[in-house]
Every structure is written in C-alpha cells, then in structure tokens.
Length: 528
Image 1 (tube, rainbow, N blue to C red):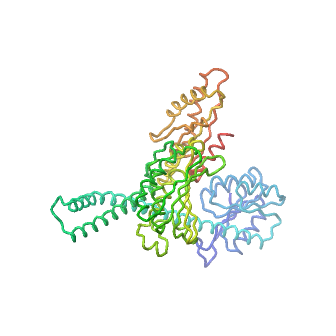
Image 2 (cartoon, rainbow, N blue to C red; image 1 turned 90 degrees about the horizontal axis):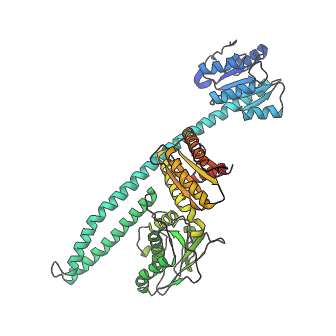
Image 3 (tube, one colour; image 1 turned 180 degrees about the vertical axis):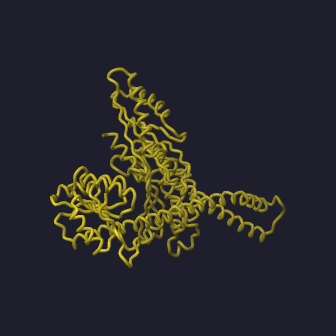
C-alpha cells in the first residue's frame, strides 16, 4: 500500500509543469527522504510504495513518467520490476538505485530496460539532475517521434499525390494518342493529294503540322513510359539473348539519321561474349535513346562507337558503352543528367529540342533489367554512356525471384501491409531426389498459405523454395508451423534416413525495413 501520496505544487499546472514519479523502496526512511527531495523541494509530483507488486498495481491505475526503484527488495527485486515495467508499460522510464552497486548489476539493469543506474548513498542534487536528464531525453525522443510521424504522414500524402499524378499522366497520354493519330492520318492524306490538289504553300504548312504532331507523339510516349516506370507497372519479359542482336539492329536503324550529319556509327564487338538475360525490346529502347542522343549532340563529321566488355572478372555482368565525339557534358552536370526534365546548359544543347525525359526513362529501363548506368565526359572531348546487364551465368538464377520480391515488397510498402519471406532448403546430395522432393514440398507448402496472392517459386541453381506471403510476425509463425508440419509428413514418406529440411523466415516491417535486409535475414536464418 502506498504510504505517501503526491501533492501538486501550488502555482504550477500539474500536467504541464510536473512530471509524475513513483518511488519504490522498502525502507520507509529513504522513501520519505526522496519524497521530500523530489516532491517538496524539486517540484515533481511524487508517490511512494514499498514493493514491486504495489508498484505494478499503481502504474496499472495511474499514469507515471518515471519509476525510481531500489534494487534489493523482498519478493520482487528491482531488476525484475524494471523488466515487468518494460514489458507492460514501455512508455514509463525506470531508474534503478542500489547500495551494493557494481558494473555487472548496472549493465543488467540497462539490458532489462532501465534508463539510468544510481548508487547509494544518494547525492540529492545529483539525483535531481540525473532524473531531469532522463526525463528531458524522453521528451526529446517523444518530440522526434512526433516529427517522424508527421514526416511519414507527409511522405504518404506525397506518395499518394505522386501516384495520382502518374495515373493522370498515364491516362491523359493514352487518351491523347488516339485523336492525335487521327489528326496525323488526316494530315498525311491531305499531303498525299488524295483529298484534292494542294499548292506549295499548303504543303509547307501541312509538313510543319506533321512535324509537330510527331514531336507531340514522342512527348506523350515519353510521359507514358516514365509513368509506367515510376508506378512499377512496366512489363519486363526476361529472356536469354546475344547482345549483338539489339546493338546491330539499333545501329542499322539509326544509320540514316547519322548519315544525314556525316556521322559514322561503329559497332565494336569482337570477342566472344556471354549471353545476357533481359528484355530485348527494352534493351533496344535503351540503345535507341543513347545512340540517338550521341548523334544529336555530336557535330557533323563525328563518330559514335558502341562497344561491349565483361564488367567484372566473374563475368556476372556485361557492360555496353556508347562513346561519341560530341561537345561533352560539364562535370557538375553529370550527376543531374538522369533526372526528369533536366537539360544540359550549352549552345548546342539548347538548339536540340527534347522533353528532358530520355535519360530518366533510360535509367529506369536499365534498372528494370537489373543493371546500372553512368556517364563519363569531358567538355569538348565527347561523352561515354555505359550500362550493365546481368549475364545468364551470373544472374539468371536470381532474376525471376528478385523481380517478384521487388514487386511484392513495393506493393507491401505502398499498402503499408506486412510481407513475410520464407526460404526452404533440402539437404540432399542427389540432384534428382532433391528436385522430386521440392516438387512435392511445393504442393504441400501452397496448401499452407492463406492468401490467393501468396507466391511460391524456385531459386533453381540453389534448389531453394521461396515463399512470399502477406502475413505479420504472428501470422507468419502460424504459417511456418503449418509448413514445417506438412514438410515433416512429406519427408517421412521418403524412408530412413529422411532428408533434413531447413526453413528461414523474415518479416517486413517487424524485423526488416528493406527487401535486401528481408532476404539477408531469411537466408541467415536458413543457414542457422
């Protein structure tokens, strides 16, 4: 039972000015001393109880900012009380005091959730300063928490606005293309003379109209591509391909454009190269943007060279470079050229029209193919744009899995919903046996999932079954138990000794805050 009840200090607002402290000490004299020092002199609202059990009952009924407890008490000691408060009321700060202090007991107190540790006999001035510091730190933490909440709320609103903007751009671009195509067809019919004879002046204006229609069509195409990339709705069809095919196709397609400026396009691919794994249509679009830009910004009589080379010693990625002898890009602009609507300052750059979206789209397409892109340049010496693509040997086993993980993580992040990744591995030396087991396990695992949209897929080279499901930590634990139970039943049918099956699991956002961390944690637990 509490033997000292707190009182408000006259002239002060209890809620605004006073912090509420609960003192827990089985020695009444010390409790009274602390009550007077903290309540009557220092202005805190203070109550005193004699045991840990009373303290827990008290904090259940009333609100306190801090509990100051003795270490040595009958029945429940201070360490246990700190632990109980940390679990039941984590918002309440705890400070431990003891006459038998040691580094070990201080460390143990901190591990269990205490904010500070004081040794007896207490220096009352130091006590007040230390408690005030702990309370101030809590206030700063709460302020930061409020700021973080407001920032997250603002970010959510911005993301929503951005999604609405992307959706509007996508719909508007799509809807405008149909009437624009009709206008273009009408102009072409008039220019052909099929609607009647036209004079030279009319032909001139119709030609001007067609050029502007084509320009507007290109702008709409760029906006549509960018909105698809930003919304994650771009469709990537991975396949094994020889990079020479898209390179040579785009080079020959753009040759007339280069010939008009007496620019030579050279394709320099001589050594045998590993096959890449990507979307051929998107790779052609990347090359069209880069080679097209090189032609645009290279003066007459210049040269554009397209070359390829392994990007690393293990040949896991292939680098494709487009080099020109153009005017170059200032170093302070190199970091900005892949931003939306950015156009490099310069006389020739200003003369060449464009939306400023080409390189932003190119970067998005490269990243959608799991590559990276960068630029190197010297003003007056030309520029080199290089991008990488994964090779079949290096990355094929991961791409489908990574694509699905990216998609599901983006969906979970956008919907503020949980996502759990399971990795299931069979320890079996015989490849045929392992494949047969994985086939059976995959059927059993699918029956354990709760949502229609939950996904199971193979990481073929590692012979690992991966599962992505919308479940929080509690739900994921239940799914894991069902999976392990079904796998155990299935494995028992394979005779003695039955194969060893391991399961690794991680949940966003409870345990991991990024898809990289989600995979790393699940893989780590798989090996544990």
